[in-house]
Picture 1 (cartoon, helix red, strand yellow):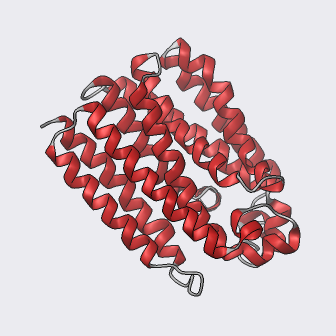
Picture 2 (cartoon, rainbow, N blue to C red):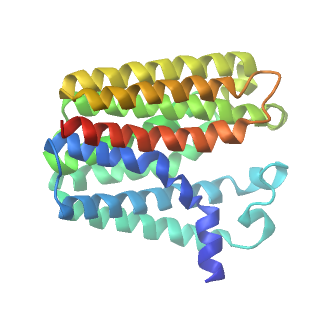
Length: 282
């Protein structure tokens, strides 16, 4: 049981709250309501497998850098609590689980699953050569929205692309905020990020812009899907949370960054899901 606990800690299982709600949102919008237990179950399994693959691979890929960074030196691989082999095998198991779930959903899901896995397992490399890695991470998390949609519809439709864009800029926005705490380390070790390349003020400004784009995309989604009044109540709540999130951090004070990163964005994901559910059943 202790090994299982360490594995769940290492892959940050609680961060599933960020992407999983958007897979459910996509399914319900594509179905125009409840998509059925079978689809929900296989999409949930695909998400669990894909995210496990991504996070386990990330920990293995970044283990040398994590060992040198005071913020991450206490992670499980640098401390020797888990081994690279263990997490590598976990990544393989996650990938196989996702492939199985995609096979059980429909042929398009199965055909696109290897491409999705390429992003999931490989996005961690981008910070070693490009400061656009924040948007690569956002795009990769947005696969949840695209996958949830095609699991139901067996095709891409414009609302799916709008939702994918919303997730991309939402994730990129709060990753820009999160990266500000590592600006000195990234510069010293040649890692690429917007804060390291352009400075913390520009990074926070771009984070605000990305979250404005998120709110705009979610508004466009509500119009395209014909969602009811309760969706717009949820949308206003999300906008309020964005304002609150950005009030927590400034170039001179990043002390409340963890609250802005996890707590606020977890609420944003759950409220958006609730808004879509209530907006559909108007």
